[in-house]
Length: 485
Image 1 (cartoon, rainbow, N blue to C red):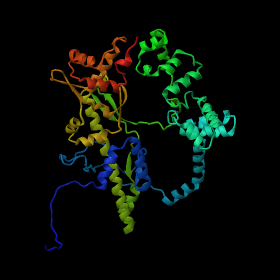
Image 2 (tube, helix red, strand yellow; image 1 turned 180 degrees about the vertical axis):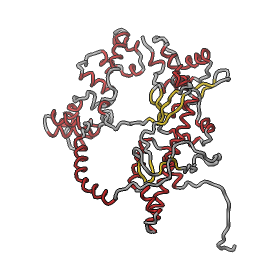
Image 3 (cartoon, rainbow, N blue to C red; image 1 turned 45 degrees about the horizontal axis):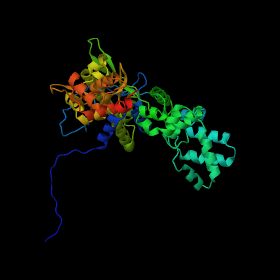
Image 4 (tube, rainbow, N blue to C red; image 1 turned 90 degrees about the vertical axis):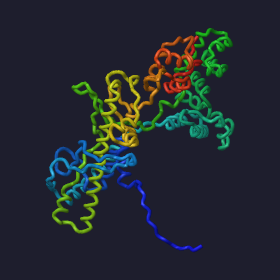
């Protein structure tokens, strides 16, 4: 066989994910707070880009809807057809001022600014963590230093709930502590605040909390100690028979247990709060129709600095400087248009949600949500479904029922019993909750019975396993745990 090298040509059609397309997708999908951080980084790295504060000069790109080319089904959401129309005066007016004078003023104020910043950061009150709080108690309440150190080791074994592993004592001894020292440290930890820490499991924690309340001889404590398995199955009658007390006393004891904490360290959750930024506000117009309005919170208005453009136009720059300014100008324009494209897309999707879920906004609530898919909205806006998915990711709308994630408006459907119409799963969940709330406490409904009621009374064809899934999603326990005596 003869071997050798040869060249050939092949023509094929496909998509390539350029850096600009990738960047535009990141901007489209980014929540407002992340977008603000992205813009901040761009402002620090691109001297031609600046934020508009009030009236001024520069090139500001419009957020008004623009004409875009029709996409094909093969394109997906890789749309780089941004409108580059410039709105608001094309006249370039220098801002004035000397950049070197500005630099000198910044340098002269930097020491004072740093001092102010350090003062603010150092003065900020930091919340005390659960570990710090417990270790402080160990130091103050421990009879000696060794017990305090052994207790600190036990604290290092605690999980986020405040529980320690079943072999905690053995592991403490393996660290070099004696039986007496390990036991003393465990007793110290279990007597600390918040009550319930240092327990081996949920049952142990609940019993510790009752001991802290001086209720070690209560019915609730004895139920935990002697009949925990029956309690988990809520076998009230069997517990009452074994303890020779009434079912009402058992129910009262179980209700008192519900006041205890399943996670003793819940009040010490110092993880950063998840803040959300409202992107859209649903408002009813004079014509009675609901529409979405952009808040533009955390979305700064940007423009290209005209001073550099003047220098470029007057030929004051060398070859390298000219290339640099040109590159940064293109990068700045792309960022401005990518943000404008994001806002236009978000506004269009918000309007579609308001139109198609008007019953929700008009007072019907989540039970009035209609079946809606991203495919439906995408077809109405001549977009790809993945574009809609990216655009609504981690975006929120202010509604008459509070701040709602945009993804919550997209709900799947459940077929009616006669097959003639569809209802949203949100409506099914709302009805399921109403049915269970009206059931008899002594004879609650099973999932099969609920499915039958939905079919016979509401013309909804829902399987038993679907009822169980929706019930779990609503946080409603099964029939055996809802029964009261």
